[in-house]
Every structure is written in structure tokens, then in C-alpha cells.
Length: 212
Ligand code: 5GP
Image (cartoon, rainbow, N blue to C red):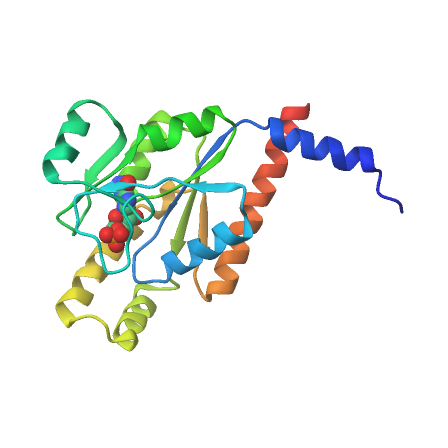
């Protein structure tokens, strides 16, 4: 069967006209989340990452304005008082403040973009108050035991740091039912595939309902 070029055009036009969409992704750190998300952004260039603000110090190689906006505690508090954050929290088990700046989200949504937040569970619940239609995805390890095995095998952290990460993971897993989608991170490739496919499907449905 021939493809009708007009059909292709109209789908493209609809994609352009689709309203913006917020996507929120959470999951315990130490489970490959950063690598998975990097590949998701490569495969779906129509997704835009929101850069969070934090009071924690940059890790080696991290760039201000790309990985995070690294702020002093005073600057963070002043912005918080001025209402510049969509949500902000002293993230569980971290002892540092993290927050999503309104300026990273609202203008892009208004311009019809798909904006991805990578934030913790408390942040997600707060965002849902403002954007109840956000697509929420929890990227989870198969089990906490599997996460522990990975952290121990990786050998980059002390037993105390691993114990703290596992405590945080257990806390986050208590909120998993609040997310629309759960993706099990068995391998990087499968997790990237699952996330991209579900977002592509959602995008097509949004385009179809914008057309009707
Ligand atoms: P890390 O310090 O390892 O980069 O991130 C620690 C935790 O902070 C992760 O669980 C991450 O999801 C969370 N986080 C990063 N940015 C934000 C944010 O803007 N808001 C909230 N609530 N959590 C965030």
C-alpha cells in the first residue's frame, strides 16, 4: 500500500500543534536512572529536560545550567520566598535542597513542548497538584535486593552510603502506586525502549485527540 504524503504532512502538523505535556520520572538513584534518561533524550529529541536547582555542590564533571543550577543556600531560599519554584524540597536522605524552577517549565509548556522532570517522589506529588495531567513514570529496580547487589558489585560506595541509598529506595518505593506507569529497569536497553515507547504512544494519542 502507498503512503499518502498528505497523511504524513497532517500527522506532522498535528504534532506541531499538540499542546505541551509535562512528564515526571522518579526512581531510586544507583539503579542506572541517569544513563537510562540520557539515552531516552537521545532517542526522543522532542523531549526537553528541565534543569533543576540544588544547594548541593557539583560533582566532578557536572556543569552549572546543564546538570543543575548550583545555588547557594541563601540564593535558593530567596528564590523560594519569591515563589520561583514549581516545587522544592529538602530531598529525603540527602540534606540538600532541590527544586524545579517555574521558568524551566511554564514557558515551554505554553510553547507546546514536552518537558521532562527528573525529581523525587515528594516533588512529584507536589507537581501533580498543579499539573494533574502530568505523565508520571517510576523507574524501579526489580527488587531492593537487586539494587543492593548492583551497588555492592559496583564497589564505589561505603557500606554506610549503600545502606543510606537503600533506605531512600525503600522510602521511594512506598509511593510507587501514585505513578501512572512503572518501568522495571532490568537492562538499560529495555528500560529505554519501554519509556520511549510509552511516551511515543502518549504523544500519538495526544495528537489524535487534538485532531478530533
Ligand atoms: P542527585 O543529587 O543524585 O543528583 O539527586 C538526588 C535526588 O534529588 C534524586 O532522587 C532526584 O530525583 C532528586 N531531584 C533532583 N532534582 C530535583 C528537583 O528539582 N526536585 C525534587 N523534588 N527532587 C529533585
